[in-house]
Length: 615
Image (cartoon, rainbow, N blue to C red):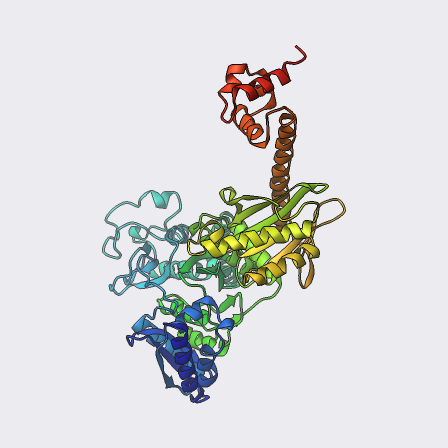
């Protein structure tokens, strides 16, 4: 769509949006072909929908792309925001719009199965069948399900064989599990159904509530039995408590104070996003999942969409849901989850303490999942995100260019440019510059010249998207406010909108702060960012000063050669290129000197005589 046509269409859609009622409802965006590309809900339709067709500069990239494809929209008025949430979820499932967050079904998940027989057995299954059994789950971590079921059966001495009860009572001797005290052996026919069923219920409590809840309930049962002087039953329960504690010691306990809850966090690198879900039961992490979305979350309501979609896939709703950000429609989502669970669900957004640490851990895992796709590490992702937040950038700076000037009293004035991509040096993109615009020492003018040449190249190569044809996400100059001020007019001249900052050193030549047009930002207290910037500043300094030393060395070589009659700049350069060092030139015979490009017999003889005049 051409720019003028787009503006006309946006104005038409905004005019239509301004006529919407201030009522809760669902809005449905269509493209030119009439296909539904986005479905959203709103507390006030007019306010929400009209925002799409205002200034595009305030929208994330995903929203801008969606708006560019909107040709028309329709809406459905609801009585409440809660009804709008339910309708939105239903329509998203029905139409699968391109720009909505969609989750796959639960195929491939694991379940805990409780058989429908009177003498029930507990097993783990990879598929949910329509066989009348009770299925608990689904869980993504099949290893956790298998391990938990095995633990429960061992602790509460439940049979894992294929024998059926009461049909197989007394038909065969008990197996090895009975003799090693891992099965109560109902096959002997000596166990009451009441005692067997009590153990099954305790095992289910252990699986559903975790070890801490199970210990609490078993302890209460043991104390009750002791009060009734039923010491035999109390002793059996005591043995179960000991077994639960022993098994709990082998488990990785994330935090003893964690209630039964789910933690959801989100991370994006501006190209993709990842939702991470941690599921906690009884003080331990029992399952985790991550969901990669191809376009980053651009709408405040998309987290609500994810939550509703996630718990619509036959997953158990937790009593507590902890998130890494606030929901605009928290009350509606809480109500939906509460109705699904059958009791009150609480959504929280912790800012400090143990719960905030859990959210942070969950978010780091989301970053790690996203990092693996691009071959990074979560540490590199985290430092880039922290840098983004410190500098107030719109997106994570994946492609960073850094510049430094090097000279000696204004001679051999040069600059070096290094590139970091995804938090790592991209050495094939490094560039060297020889200052050409003036003689003498002027670091500000030198920096301005280098950036001017760099973005002149960009204008010629931008269609390629490679090398100088690619815009950086961030420019870091080795220097303070003066360097930044010198380069800002250059960016304006080329109409380039790239964040620009300087890297400031202290009196000991150590990185101290980052400076921009708004002042200095201290980074010494931000360990990861401080280390990252320090390494980058050291690297660009090493690269630029290395180039400067090479230039000075070559100049010294050339000056000694140009003292020879008949040898000028061209022949001196040719000799150095051919022989590599002055020593090699000195040791060459006349024939070797004559064979060097650009040399004649007379010039070769002059060079030979120059280095052998004292012999």
